[in-house]
Image 1 (cartoon, each protein chain N blue to C red):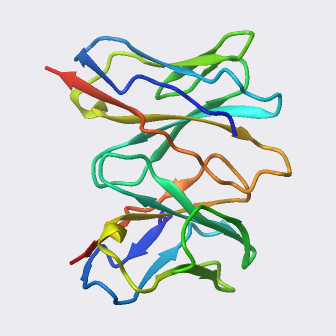
Image 2 (image 1 turned 135 degrees about the horizontal axis):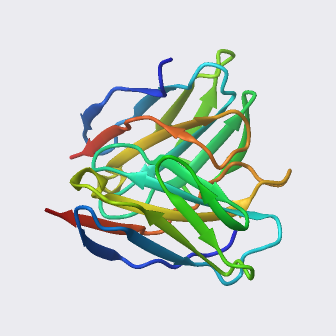
Length: 112
Length: 113
């Protein structure tokens, strides 16, 4: 079975631009969460979606938004990019609200 | 969610047993203890989870004393490929849980030949 897949794997954006990151969960998993990991730190929770509804939101500005589609895939959007948004963005899926989450390889975003 | 404290870094040699201790003094009754492993430029990987006493799987063992205020992840006979960051997480599995995982800085384990 395929694991959690994220796209793209890397991208470079300039300040002020907008970016969309994509995540496909493991088949059968209805919960998708997004995390931001800055170099040298642990992942920080951004959003959790379950059954296409937002179930949790971390301490991130409104420039960050997400959604989940009927097939349970998800997108994370970040508007008005700042240099500080440069990070590894991780997507995780799980059956429901579970501490056993399965992470993708992440998308490395560099803002210049 | 209970706050966790673990050593920033540890060194070991191949073939040794490594024990990483995590402190979680304000753990709640409904909280479980979960450990993740992360290699550079990869997402974290679930290792083991427990509530009390001892849990063992093919990768590691988790020891939790009766007061549950700490836990110890034990990696038997480590190899160079076990070099990674290890995170201890504590959280509620009840209906109030949103699936939000709170990661600290983790413990960077360096295994030397």
